[in-house]
Amino acid sequence: MQLHVARLCLDCDEVHDRQMCPVCGSESFAYISRWVAAPERRRQPRAEAPQETAEAYRQLLAPERPPAALNRWMKRGVFGLAAVSIAGWVLQRRSRSSEPPRKNP
Image (tube, rainbow, N blue to C red):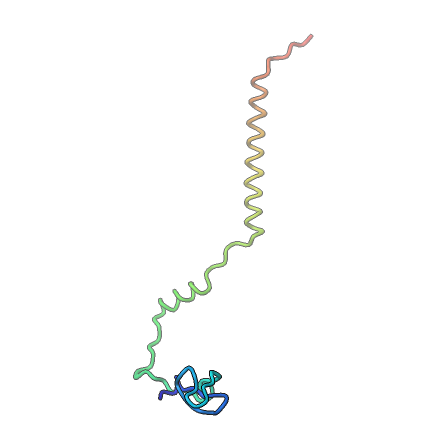
């Protein structure tokens, strides 16, 4: 039995690798590897990730933060104010040009 699958029954202290204890039928267990460190199972240790791959992972895990909500609302507000001002200016010019000229008495 391999250490990473070995289980200790919490009721009768039997070591097993099944879902239920074969002695008492209990489903209460704890993995033995919780207390006993299992040695590396690989024959060769893991190779270090290349720098490019590590940087890509960092960017995926911690992407650049979007601009703050306040900045976004400020930009929208400035754009909206400019749009309303231009529309008002255009409407004023139209209304002035469509009025008949006034006569002075």
